[in-house]
View 1 (tube, rainbow, N blue to C red):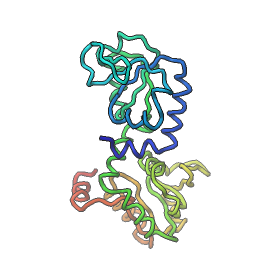
View 2 (cartoon, rainbow, N blue to C red):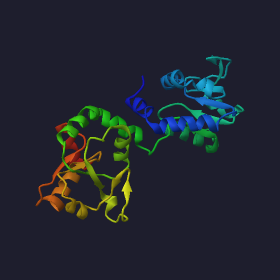
View 3 (cartoon, rainbow, N blue to C red):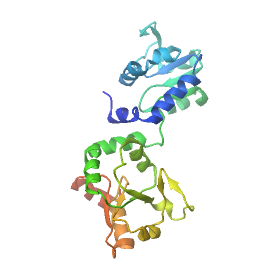
View 4 (cartoon, rainbow, N blue to C red):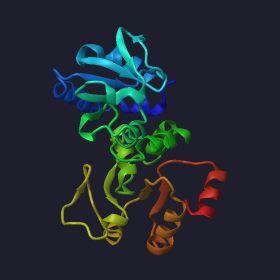
Length: 258
């Protein structure tokens, strides 16, 4: 069963650019494809992987024996037998590609320069964070938040990978974002830009006089408390999280600190 991450990731320009780049890079090369599950089936229907790549072997954990079994007319290879085959490149076609890359490199001793993946992670927790947003119905709650912020000046707190993930996968164009700030922004360069937004330190944010600070962090309870108590108690600035979580999750977060 395909995940929420699969559907969001494969709609991004990043994914399509990576796929097109791989088609060009691997042109004429002999490819061993790793992963013949639902991700492969869906992508093959949409992008005709068998036509665009010179796939001579396929491997998957379900192929456990060395035999003459075929998959769509292509020779199957048990993962433990990959090193015994002659190919130019391994192409990974599974969502959890970092795990497979680690297995190929460290367990099978495949040269990392001979490994490519369709699911190229922007950062290590990309898939986990996307599933996290889905768990808390972010796709439904974000439009409600944006509607409530109509005509309001907004500063985003969280100039990091988590906000990048949101920016790349969800429409923020109707939110009047006038800048971003965060822990990494205190010593920012003049005229520094994060994504498309101007970067500010917390003290500079006060001079912007925003209506709202929206905390775009996975765990936000303590951050909101600190921002209010240390910086914005004497102001009219309101501080809200970018995603909502149920009360029990918030209590656990406040108690454990994450």
